[in-house]
Image (cartoon, rainbow, N blue to C red):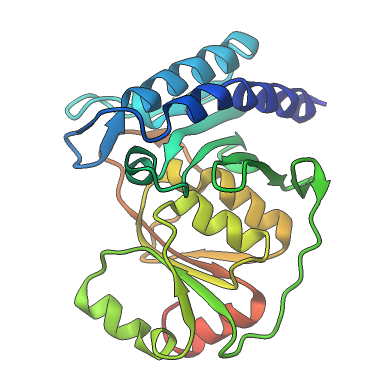
Length: 265
């Protein structure tokens, strides 16, 4: 019941910002933050609106937004409550600012440090994507029918660039055979994987707020997600602007088998 209450509020929080998101798409100025990522006034306003809505409903929960992290030099924010929220007000800000429709609002609910529910507003599809540990995947409220096809040369793989030369070399057996996609949004990269549009995803450069919501969807879809380099994202116990980049691979069982055969995992 506690999770169901929060899911209801999460839906209202995200849907309540969509009209503003759409109004500002490609019409806002941007600047570069200290970490060399882009931010717009829309990121900041959506962050404030959703933060205020969620914390007003559940003041006992922890809340983390990409746009409200402890500054460099400040201590990390510990997440001590049973429930915690992780928000990326606009994932794919570069796309959003330049008028490329692959961008999303991403909100995750964590219980004891693990994602149990995620909701994304996918601007490109004008769709709400949802799913979690005990929440079936759905698109605009319609249950999704997810399959796990065999991995072959027809399978689609999504990647995130730029990459280091050694990383590109390791992926060459896939890149020279399979069709590739680069959404410019880690949240959509992983969510499209969960919903079956993508068979396998590889990303060496994301933060926790980029993928927390979609990670819940991957679990709901029965697909696997492996974090590399001994740097597991969950359980999430603290957040800060200096959190290390996450490296991960996710996909169907057959894709993950292929990734292991290639030594990627």
